[in-house]
Image (cartoon, rainbow, N blue to C red):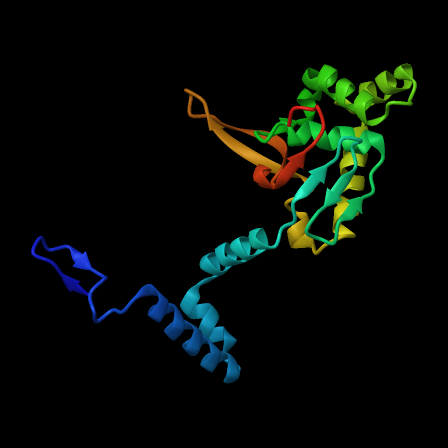
Length: 209
């Protein structure tokens, strides 16, 4: 590392080597510490925040694409074409949250009643419309526990198909968004979101996701 004529640090000179060489050196040093059973020193050198970031990147690299077929089957393409076995109501709820990457608060689900009804009718074509409307009424009622039960079922299905860390990208999970008012009062939106990167979703249906 050296300084150029402007006094700025130059990390690309011949003494520092290429980034590939640095990575190779890092690999050798980490391997040496691991063989000496001193993983504690690796952890101390790298730091927990960076390890968590690396774990995040590693998980993203192994996530499967989620295919939603024209007949509303959910298939994990890169996990051996495994189908996610969900009932029509669970699929409708899942599709609703996929369509809203910004997140939805459960207490505001009634604002999405028409959209959820449309999705449920698409996933359950043979079901009586009155039963669908009744079910949607329960799901969008803030005093009803139906939406929590459906999200819990979705979570259990994905966790049965992969490790918990990977599943955290597919399930409907919590996300708190902090806001500041003019009076400096802090308040939170308690959103529910699906963290799966949307470029991994392949939608063959007519639903807008």
